Length: 330
Image (tube, one colour):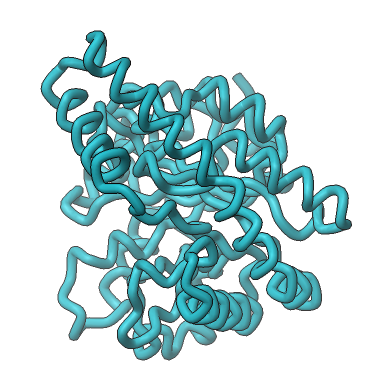
């Protein structure tokens, strides 16, 4: 294996998501998070979609690079998760588009080169074939009943429901993205469409292939790509609603970035090395210039984060500037 210094000049800096900021009270703002990131040796951060506008004050003077901004950031007052580009309601799509426009502007103002976003989800039009089936799949998986005839029947019914409704939702989202892609291109921002966690979150692997195909055909391939969330795909794979092999085939290397976190079953946002994912295998599947963010839950202590960073370094992940004060082993 090459040394830790080899390839650093070409590899992006590993960022820490402000999802970890939830260790501290909102009244403390970003200050304790930024101090922890520096102690751990991070040279960059990602701004998550939980941040209100007041938490962004002072970031221009911070010494940590903002590499990625997660839509919606800043989080608009009264934001509803039903405000999405896939929504059937035109007003909801307009609110989602306005928030994404603000996120792109935030990224440009802070010098970030990437905006990552959840495209949206399918809305419930028949509780018996959507919400109930999702609950059954997740409940049976957690109970260890993944491999059963009843599970297979519920999975087949859910996939049939999803696949019949996704094309219309993606058409709506793609139309809403057009002016935002132009805004992103003008600001030299790339847009990453994130892989979802819940089974009704879009796009599916086939939907992602459709979106990337349209992007290439219409001249947007350099502006929009796929964003791999490792824990999300791990959970989808555990359910059987979208498998790793399907994602690799659908995206075919057109990844622009990744959220790194581990999972055990449906429990995600674990530190890499605490779950079932093979991060040494994942690294060569991504482009060398893909943006990389560690996105983990707040309850892990800094010593635990440092140990996970050491594991990632051993597995070949880019850790520019690491370690500074950390001396933990894998």
